[in-house]
Length: 302
Image (tube, rainbow, N blue to C red; front, side):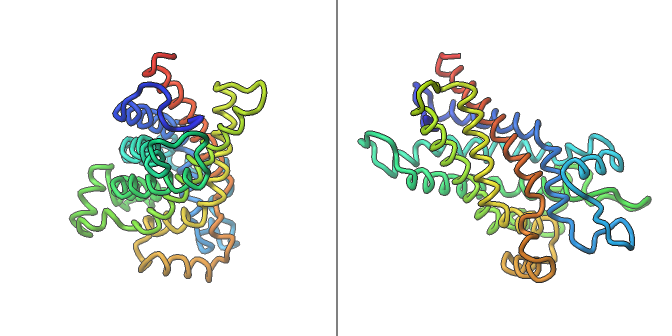
């Protein structure tokens, strides 16, 4: 990237490794923020701490504090195993495929700055392809994160990631691992388009400003821009995806959307916006900084 296509002599496998490693590191660092986001998105108006109607989870820091106090610090990394599995597959594929797909769309002989709409389309396609493969890991991650503190004597649905995979297949069938595939494909295709295309474009624009170079500051600014655009565009789909994966009572994507809209209003689709931006902003900065350094290492420029 002035863009995400390899500028050095790096193979597809090396780009995949760089992006998977960077995505896993970013996932580990920001998972507590993701836990808070999921709990806030799944929280409905009826879920309160008392009859007065005060929500159990309030705000990013409040949600993190509540989880740590009631469930212990390790609970903030619930779903880390499927989360890392997801990033190895999804994170590796979405970025490593982006360059080749973008080149294919404009043609191998194209010279000059690639148009923004080609970048958006390339990122949209690679996000959709990657999540088709990685959806089971996303489902298990959300199911594990959705479980809060249970009353004494009430067993947890799943003892861990492996148990979640096997239990879901036994009780709901193999196809259940692709529950929420529709909103998940839409969400990840949209967010990937916002993230990669905006990072690509913002970085390209910054590098045209006198005094700016392809360094950490440029990567940081472009990463924050990517996170902001991704959250603004993808929040409604993200809420629907989280609710469908965390609650099997919804018939389909449209049913989830309509019920949420009727019972909680349009703003419900932006529940957890700030923790989501905090998470995605931090995630993108960490991921892209790590990716750029790993790419330079393989290209002999570290």
